[in-house]
Image (cartoon, rainbow, N blue to C red):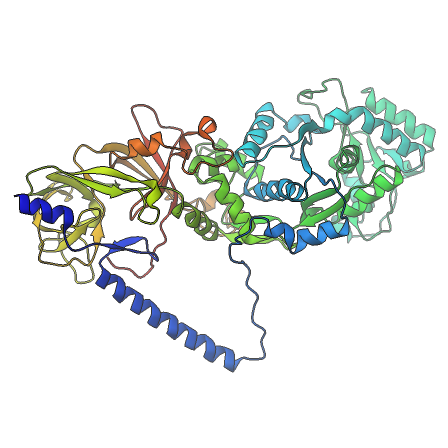
Length: 630
């Protein structure tokens, strides 16, 4: 028996990692796969070369995604953001991030946050978090709090937190000044009438002209504006419009609105006595001016707004910041619209705004994606003026690459079936590494019991030549152990036709072609949630029947009786994985308990977990070889 134990612990056959698929396989099997991939790559290269020679006149398309920069400041040293600083090389740099407190931030906002805070930090400056609280009907304290929490989670600290409403009186005074300059007037047109005067739909259905209210004298406009302030007009019956350039080709110069009277559903959280509110177009540029913003960095949908931004500051003779626009980040197959997200939540299609299938930042956080992985992804993409459309798989690949180097590895069995090894009597304690690539993560103890549990998908009652896992008469290796086992029999449930148990013996004479994960008897039970895209198409909004009709009912798979090896307890105690700014020991939530489940994917503890029930969310799956048949 002692000889058997020695053979089990120190057997000669050691599995090695297949970096492409994330599997542990024999050296011979890895050699075969490597040769096969090399042949495939050579064939593809030959086809590409042949195609290139046949069509040499066509330019080669540029790479859309650059390799991950080693220098996290590369996006500020080169390219678009470097050019922005060269346009105005002033210091100290002051930037701002100005969200509206009317919803949860999403992945696209993470790019804007990284740029605003990173640009200022790189140039030795500061970033202000300014809430654009100009629409009380849509605002809620929960959004203020969530925004500050997410920015902290991403590892950034604003120099100060301000609110547009801090400046409501100052903005009002400047609006009166604008009227006195003859550059603003109170208009009583309906939205339909305003659109018609602006040339109809897209400005292409007729001539543009000013309404009769534009001819009112300054005193009349000032009196009416003060009546707006004092609540003497009903909602939507009067607006203050800027008198710009109606002949300009830019719609943002067609006398856009500066103040409006909302149908007040609730009072403003900070200044409840105001009865009219400035628009974003009036507020944004002036608040930038008040706060001494040097570089106002925003997404490319505000390109046209730059002209009105500069016009207003110049007209009022205030300090003029410089606005520049970068391309917005979009993920295909995902939705970012607050309206759409709200519908998904209210229709109970998802668990909430933080459902791991969504791309809100609170959802990505709950899913277990580390903040540093998101920032690394932004750096990897770089910053240009072009809108960026990224497939979800591309984002997941970046996250996977980050996690591979930073989290420990454990074994998880999703759908366990017991395997009893008949010629194994004593419990053997194995020493398993938390990471084969990083010895600094240490090792953990793993009991090798007589009865172990494997995943149901790793056993077939009927063998096949292309199948390399366990089957009657077939041998398979067990990860973290060096003694393969061979199945000799099994039992089934007559009603369900499912295998209920397997009998096996050690097989030290056959070299297995594949290794599978397993957990010992007495392992920790857990619920595991696997995720795929919430929608079936890459553009749910344009889907036939609407985005609700595009929801994939199979986007979440739950394994209620999964098992994880007991070393998970140590992994949980040592969290966060990894320890980064924004996820220090004191701030670490359950999602910071991250690990790789060998052959399955990367996981994090879900916030639904209790002392009695452990729940894991799949962060991202392992990279899969589409043609593997093991």
